[in-house]
Amino acid sequence: MSSVILRNINKSYGNLPIVKNLNLDVKDGEFVVLVGPSGCGKSTTLRMVAGLEDITQGDIQIGNKTINDLPPHKRNIAMVFQNYALYPHMSVRENIVFGLKKSGADAATIKQRLTDVSEMLKLNEYLDRKPADLSGGQRQRVAMGRALARDADVYLFDEPLSNLDAKLRHHMRTEIARIQHQYNMTAIYVTHDQIEAMTLGDRVVVMRDGIVEQVGTPMDIYLQPTNTFVATFIGSPAMNLIEAKLEGEELVFDQYRIPAAKIANVDMHSLSAHDTVLVGIRPDFFEDSALSSPSDNLFEFNDIQVDLVENLGFDKEILFKLGGEDAKARLDLRSHVKRQEHISLSVDLNRVLLFDTSTQGMLLNAGEV
Image 1 (spheres, helix red, strand yellow):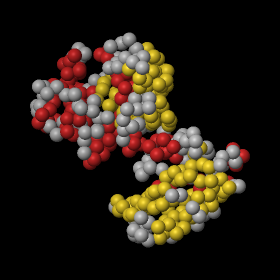
Image 2: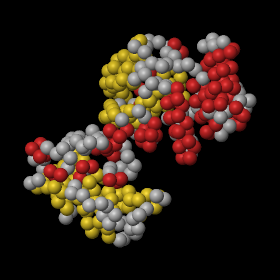
Image 3: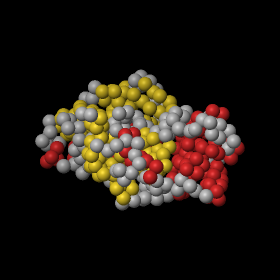
Image 4: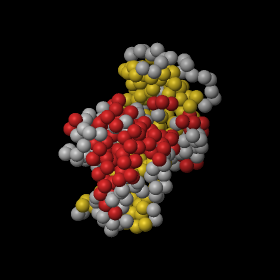
């Protein structure tokens, strides 16, 4: 496997910029996920690494070799596409070994790779079928098998699971993670699904409008998002954001007065320059006060009216108003709250984040993970 380095990458179509000054280092054997909304430039970035899109400006290196001018077939990359891109007239067997044959691999190597991949992806009974005779999940496994059969330096995945149903997506996520770790593959994976990003990536690259907003481990990004975009894009349900006034050393909204000094690593001098801030609380960090353990750093939001309860099995999500905005909390099955009831919710102030109202950037560190 090899490392991948992207330096000052720009991509424009005419006067329309798509990717803007992107810099990224992917270590040998690392699984990096590019995530963001549609049109953010993540697939374009992947296609530039593959050689399917030209670079307007910048350099791409694979294994410390600049590959800007190399055609795709000379970059030694393997790619799995969203639409599978299988040859319909070929059998599963022929699709898997096509790249090997084209690269001039000998018969013994082709046979061994076919055997390994077929067993790994449980494709043995489908080798003589055509793609039209397979389900969506089986076709995706064939597309993966074709990529994995090659001894590539880098493996690229362009939203490979987006056409599958939820159950199959979960299964294939597990398979991709298992294979990547088993073979120590250097992989770049593109998705708009933040659950895929959080569960698959060693590191996650969050993109918006062609710009990298944040790079970090899944938990770094979840616990310490650099701005409100990352905070609300990563995590489901999204982080609650409530505008609060700063009065002395307290953050005030509704009838609540949060002692700012109890928020982890708060810089009161820096905070005092703001009239208002955005208070960020993830739904997962709320607790039903009736079930929470006493703690000096817990803040209680009392007399909250529950507008809606969504039962999800072990979890339930409740909808309520906070600071005039819709807010959500995720509680476990021990809480028996019902719609239109009143409840008290507690949150550890070490898990509360503050954001600048105008710049949307995070003001304070979230504390230790």
